[in-house]
Structures are given as structure tokens and as C-alpha cells.
Amino acid sequence: MRKGPNSFLAHRIFVMVSGLLFGGLVTMGFLVTPSLFFVLADKQVAGMIAGEIFKNTSVFSLLFSVFLLIYSNLLVKRGFNQYKSSRWLLLVSIILTIIATFVLQPMMNDLRELALSEGAPVMQSPQAKSFATLHQLSSVLFTIEVIVSGGVFWLSSRLQVSKD
Image (cartoon, rainbow, N blue to C red):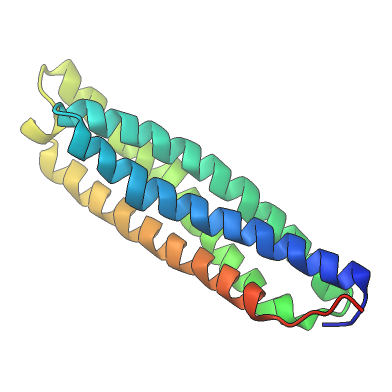
């Protein structure tokens, strides 16, 4: 990366935002959500709260990933070619988030609502197998998203930039 105060600041902003994205996803997905199921006796309530957490996490992830994608495009246009690979990883992250948020989560919510309208929690209903399959797919996509965002953070934090 070029030397100079502007390049140093631009790089530090990218590292900070990518670190917030990665840390936020890890915190919500691997600390907060499992804690709900450990602490709450009613697993259906824990699942509904977890669903809300993941909906909010998806918005957070989309906003940060889109910002980083636009920012990395600007940096590449200014000659900082080190951010080219980050752009592809961010695009993958955005696509995974969109699939999970706008395809899988609504399908899971529909199955949950159908089961509740029939008077049973989703995991004790005829929809349990479909819900479990969607949940597993959603978990896999989220895990890949965390790995990809970790890759963005890793790549950006390895770049050497001086203040001069």
C-alpha cells in the first residue's frame, strides 16, 4: 500500500470495520445464541429470540459488508490492489446473508407459524423435519459467512501500512 497519512487512515478504517463485522458475527452466533438455549428452559422461546437475534445480525452484517465492499472498491480504484481479494469475499458474504435472511428465515418462520397454528411447537409438529433441514442449512451458511468475514479481517490486518 502507498505510504502517507491518508492510506494509513483508510487502511485502519477498513481493518476496524472488518474486525467489528467478524467480532459481531462470532459474538452473536457462537456466544449469545447458544447461551439462550443454555439459560432458558423453554427451547421454543429461546428459538424465537434467537431468530430475532439472527434477523438483527443479518441487517448488521449486510450494512457492514456493503460498506466494506464499496470502500474496498474505492481503495482498488485508487491503486490499492491489495483489496481485490477482499471484494470477492465480501460479495460471497453478502450473497450468503441475503439467502439466509430473505429465503431461509422466512421459510423457517412460516413453518414455525404453521406449527403454532396447529397447536404445537415446530419441533413437535409434522413440520419438524423440514424446519430442521432449513435450520441446518442456515447454520452452515452462517458458519461460512463467519469464516469469510474472518478472512476479510485476516487479509486486511496483514497489510503493512506506515504513517509516513
